[in-house]
Image 1 (cartoon, helix red, strand yellow):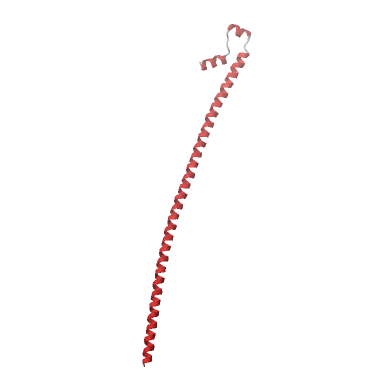
Image 2: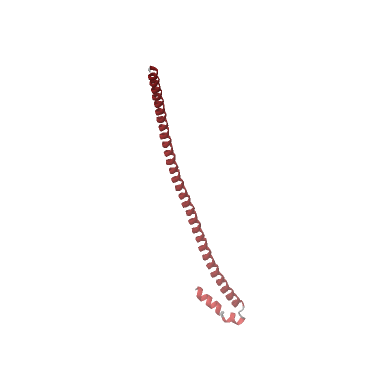
Length: 132
């Protein structure tokens, strides 16, 4: 019976030791789990920060492209306006040249009597009145 009691006590001690080892192992695993969860939370937090920074960067990039587009549009509008102004000036100059050509032709075609009497063609009189 003593051997049974010794065997039982030995078995109990062995089981208690195994229980302590298992509890220690569980604590170690729980600590590792806690550390891993913290690392995971840190990684998620960092990922969210990077995601926000990326969105901000994309927004700034889009804003910069929009500014460039607006600048190009403004330059284009200025060029179109300049072309319109230049075209109007050229049209006005063409009309002026045509009027002057008519006056020159009429003056060149005056006869001797017109020179003596000091008569000028109507185109010259009209042009002189408009310019004076």
